[in-house]
Image (cartoon, rainbow, N blue to C red; front, top):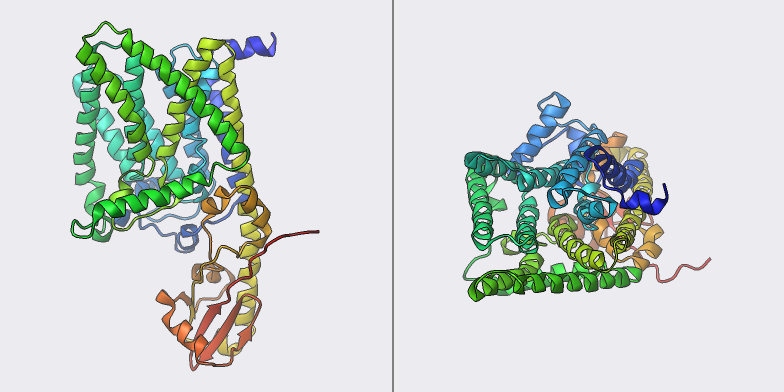
Length: 501
């Protein structure tokens, strides 16, 4: 059998699942190889701590209690990630058969962007939170694909799954709503009748509302108040939403650099061609003019809705988070683009949908590039940790100090080793989001237990500017000692303009 015939061959459930296992494991391989504790992983691993319930993510806490057979969260990486990856493979298999009853390899490519989402790389960076974030997407997929002849089950089971997803990670609701848009789009392409299309919309609305009630009665009840504060009506909320959206757009644009620009431009053109095919299908429907107009308008409105779902409800919260981990809705945008592109490419030639491999390979390449950056960050962080701990341990006055306050100095220039990668792929720096020299939570790894993070840097700044002689003056920091208290003040790293060897 030739390669062409193998690619065109219809696949069974086992073969599709094995294909997704290979694809998903390949995408997370750089994280397993890097084995880098990312930000919150440091304090969680140190104390086997949880703290998810206060964030409205009670089910993430239960997941680690169940997996570790304890009432805490000891570090058992990469087991949770492997479990989440296998679960995602099963979910993507289910979603593929939901969209394409007799799938080929090209059909499998359409749903892969839910996992091959470039911004999801930051979610996967967390050794603790990454697996639960992935499992939230798994729950969403099963909620979308659940089918039953019982109306009660069609309402309750998806609602419970959606509530479970939100209780694992709230941003997953953006993925569900985005997939609902795709469901409505599929209803149009498959010539679903007007009453059936309206019922589909009604079922999704009912499921979301019931899921909100279930979540409100469970995980939401444990959330701290400062996590739920939305923008004040008296403080120009629409202007703030516009500002927040602009900040998100600035970050997304970082992805489109170099070859990525051309790849995604071609993908967008193919998706537009697929959208034209959908429009032609709407005009050819055996419906009244009003129904056609409403369906067509709904399809057009999906574009701004999908764009809004990339950051989702976070735009409206006072504690706005512009981190890449909140942009899970971008994966659904890619799936919609792949779905429309597949429709257009398949109408031109049966083998053209395999061209969707190109953007997927680009995103896989980004994953491996990011994995190397994590490895470089791990090397830098390890050297920084041992240098700082050695300076403290070798001086009795610092070793015996009651408390040493570590000021957190943010900069874009700490990781010199990755300067070239950041220049060629600016999105890597946004994904890394590690713009500090050291976290106080790292030092207990070397036996130093009297260093704490100084909030707002008040004392360190005052000491640094009053001319006290530093006890330690290294390349990256100065350590001052006043009585029984020490202060670590970071130096601003010098930017690297050009590296020439």
